Length: 315
Image (cartoon, rainbow, N blue to C red; front, side, top):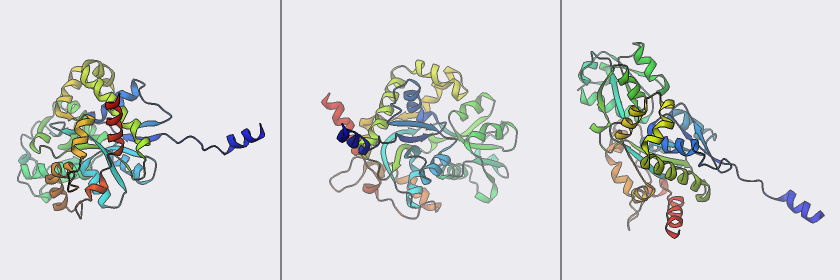
């Protein structure tokens, strides 16, 4: 009995659950759906709501999160600045779900000359703002660009403190319902806004697998029965169920198989995702948001994804 007690006392404590941050963006809703349906094991995975991607990045830097759903441009900027992140999978590509909404009297991007534009001061906000200015043949000094967190987008435009805002779903639909106008969206920059799951380097594949499983199960439920998903998720997005379903048309979600294709390396070690990201990376370089090209083989870690796919194939 004594020896058993000693052995019990020396046993390693159970590993803490993987903490993944998500913000209010419909592209991350498969994870929300998995959590709300009880498909995540709280001892292995915690899906944590954050105010914005910027907050998720701060929490990653400070060790308060192990992983986060982020846009690829943000991951590239942070790794360039020294944050040790790896990409676990590709989640979605924006095809209209990121947009610029304006006051009704602003008909075109060119009409923003001398006006106030709100945007999140992160890589994605800078990318969208840059494309908007190019669309309107505007120089940066010809507009007033104000840093506005995503949770403030609706209130800032509704109260007239800004004339336009670089935003995303569900806030974009909330603003349309209030009578504001879409003057630019991600369909005009195809393939450049890519969502990924990223984690701090050092997270082991077995730790990451519950996160990928949650994404796969939530996405399967969302795609097989969108109406049921909308009945659960629309209220928190402050949208009707019909409007929520409409927002999903602005995204192309990625299955685990499609993600594996994007993260695969060819015989020379070239990662397919690098080709998809080339135009966006050139813009980040031009805006001095990154200094050098990423080390793609080091940035991508698809071991958990491949293990999960092999496990699914075996069953």
